[in-house]
Image (tube, rainbow, N blue to C red):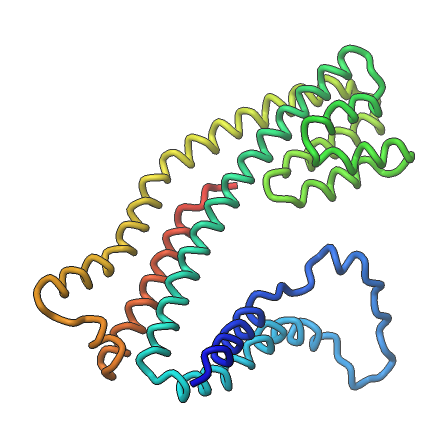
Length: 276
């Protein structure tokens, strides 16, 4: 067995799974494809093709897994797959925690920027200068400030920035901007009230996150219990890892345990999502 060849296969498999699909930003930069006049092309095929793109990316795993089974042997292959699944679960949990943290930080920045925007408008500064002050606090206001300087659609720019997680309050600011333009309402007062409303919502968000922290910690502890079970088996004189990686019954137990752990973590994350 050539270690360099085996390592290359593992790296190829990892790159195949980690290459991201084309996101919405690339769709904006790509010109739309005009519909063809061919009657054989049916519009309903497009979602199916888009959904099968993720499955198509997984096809190199089939020959790679078979080749690794021949080169490494079933025990090393099963151990590698199990470790990969565990590492993936840990990475997903860390990514979800970082996503929640960044979303909370962005909501806080938006509220602080709205306070600065309301204060500048109340002091009599033009909306362009007020947006510049808000952009210095929150990067989500950069697009709106650029649109205001160029005489563009500021509410549309705010709606675009509101698509980012944690910046949903900008959608309400865009609506307030439209109301102020159409009816002549005091935009400073609307912005100040919007900042107060978002601050109250953020307080509720933080209280909800604090109440759900215990449930998330319990789920992680329960997911780590099989590790202590394996250690307990070794302390009693058994060899659980050999059983799990060399016998058919062990394969079934290992597969069922990993599947149930992943399903439990996913379900717990779904239940602990705070209401939006």
